[in-house]
Length: 231
Image (tube, rainbow, N blue to C red):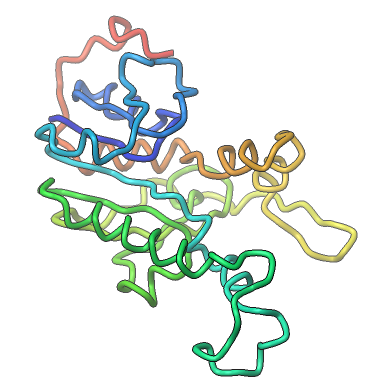
């Protein structure tokens, strides 16, 4: 199969498909961190979307459409007004336009001429401004002890079957009384820039990547893994 993993710089899912013998490529505006530039298109995904792919798994940027972005859509003094009467947020006057463009980007990915498509994103505005997700999954349903609520919108693909239910993982408690999953808190501690934190938080857990590759593709039986030099 020819598989495109859109908006992925980590190459986690790309490698999972490669292990099964598929011709998988990642694509992102960022250079890949997965170590295989020969499997990476560093460009706008729509520059390569018509290359005859059998399957696309896409991770469109969620900054403008995540649930946490809603607070930046309107002026904080206008909370009691109907949404259409609220002024733009003073710090982010273009946020509504950016949000609409992000939603249209997702729709273009889904409606492309690739037969089988999966769109992945956290809980956010897609569920209300586009359509409800087909499935919501967690890393702890696929062998990784962590919580990261992930929505899937599927075109001609089955729901993912859980592979291994484990614990929900550690949480980090902050002085404010709030807590986050440890992996999420570690992203803030280990990354020096906003972009770095976003990149770490967007990476796919290995158990989910393996389930995607195994369940959404035809397995190849005669693969000599050592010859692939994946890691």
